[in-house]
Image (cartoon, rainbow, N blue to C red; front, side):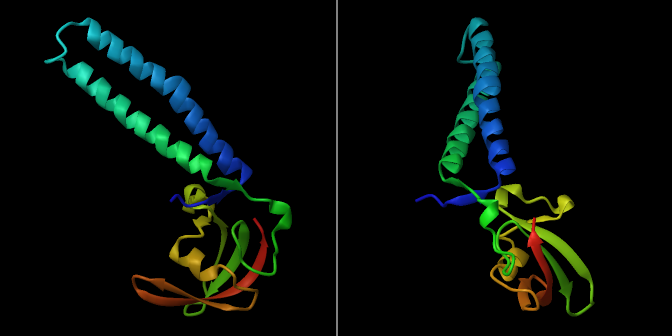
Length: 158
């Protein structure tokens, strides 16, 4: 059974574009490589043919997996997001209780996470610890170095 994942319109379109590229650009390119290698003669000792067939198998596996992900993808209706609690697409300002350091993150789906853009996955330790919390709540986040407490300073729409 596959897991349903939630995406922003931007994230869902990115996945669709990736699948389209695999099917319309990469697949024909690999087929052409197989055809060229086949034209060179004996297939039993043709490394180019073997490599192209292996690349084709890997690409078809990626296409299949991405089709399953897209089949289980759901678009998030951003107009219904409640800013009183932390949910996916919430922009959250948090403060580390131990060192008073403040950080701001937007919670997103696993495939959209990008730490440089301050987007963390709802499935990450911090994301899991923040989900469902309200402004002023303390969140205990389990890390390899032990539990870190964060205070929810502010919640807004990402």
